[in-house]
Image (cartoon, rainbow, N blue to C red; front, side):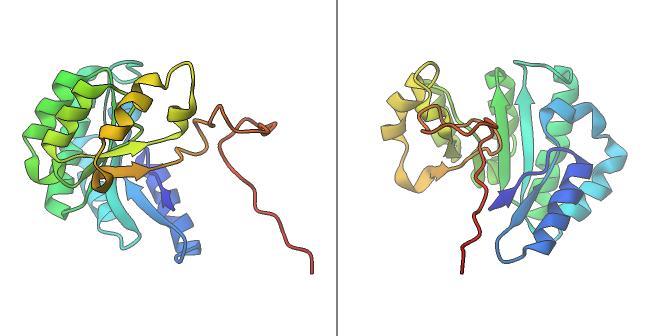
Amino acid sequence: MIVTGSTLDDTDRAIALCRQHPHALRATAGVHPHHATSLQEHDSERLSEQLSDPMVVAAGESGLDYFRNFSQPAEQRRAFELQLGLAERQQKPLFLHHRGAQVDFFAMLRAHPRVASRAVLHCFTEGQAMLEDCLALGLSIGVTGWICDERRGQALRDVAPHIPADRLMLETDAPYLLPRTLRPKPAHRRNEQHSCRRSS
């Protein structure tokens, strides 16, 4: 399982968790666009060290999110560019986030074709046109429980058959995106499953 880093501190915690369970877990190292303002130029060395950790298999979750704009778009672009450069130098695959920023997102990825061709767009929810843009860049496509949402998942259900099998990645996005078709629904509403101890 891949434990996602969304801030520098969260990445440290993800790496520590992976070291406790090295046979089951690996981490990503990065800063989510919601936290872009927290990533400054002087943090490059720290993030570079995180990316070089043997427990870290990808750079991210990074990208652009103009839908919520928890960080200003200019700050998001600056932080994304920094992470694109580090991923390129460290030769790490990218774990990408995108929402509502298609023009800037693809322009920035096209400027880094070597890393784009080793990237996965996490939690893809868009339609055919964006799928074609992603595939043209070489992106792999991450599909979550969103596909089970009868209210919002129709576009994804329509394009899913057009995702090449070697570019399709299944992900949980746990603890978010609990599949709406899950029965019975857990009382905690989190997308997670607790293991049960077997009786002897």
